[in-house]
Length: 196
Image 1 (spheres, one colour):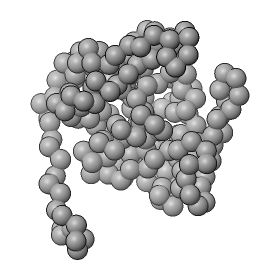
Image 2 (image 1 turned 60 degrees about the horizontal axis):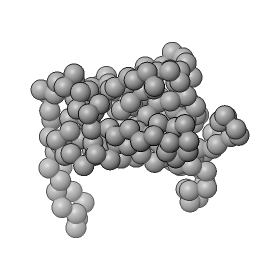
Image 3 (image 1 turned 90 degrees about the horizontal axis):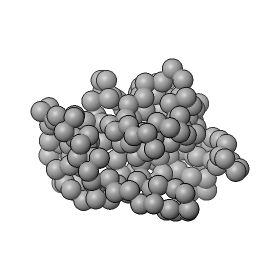
Image 4 (image 1 turned 90 degrees about the vertical axis):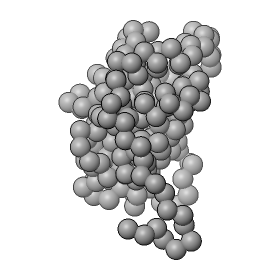
C-alpha cells in the first residue's frame, strides 16, 4: 500500500516477540519514580517520565501491553493526559487508530460525554463519536488504575458510541484503591500491580 501523496512511507513497527514480561515489570518498578505529596499532601504520585525517556524500556512496555489486546484491535483509546503517551505508541505498534478521551470542553465540535463521580464532585470525559465507528474493537489504555472511575467512564462512553471494548490495560495498578471493582466483568491487565 502506498502512502498518500506527499507523505513519507513509515516503516512497520518493530515487533518484539521475545519480550520477557517479568523483566519489563522489574524495569517499570525501577524506572517509575515515586513522588510523595504531589500534587497534594498525602498523595504518592507515580512519575512515568523516566520510563518514557528510556527508549528500550518504553518499547518493551508497549510490546508487553500489546499482548493484552488478545487479537487485532481497530482503535486504542487513551485517557487524558498520560494515557495519551502510552496509547499513541501502542496504537502504532498494533497498527490501530488512536482515540483521545478528553476532559470536558477540550474537543471542538459535537462530542459524546460521560460524567462520573469523584470523591468530592464529578468529572466529565468526551470523545468525538465519529472517531469510534459502531462495532470497532477498542483497547482502553491508561498509565495508572486507581479507583477505576475514569476507566469505567471511558468504557461506558466508548460502548455508548457503539464500540466493543476488548480490554483495559494499564501500566500500574494501585490494588488497595480497588479500581478493578469499578470494572466488573471486564478484561483488565496491569503490567505492574502495587499495594499502595
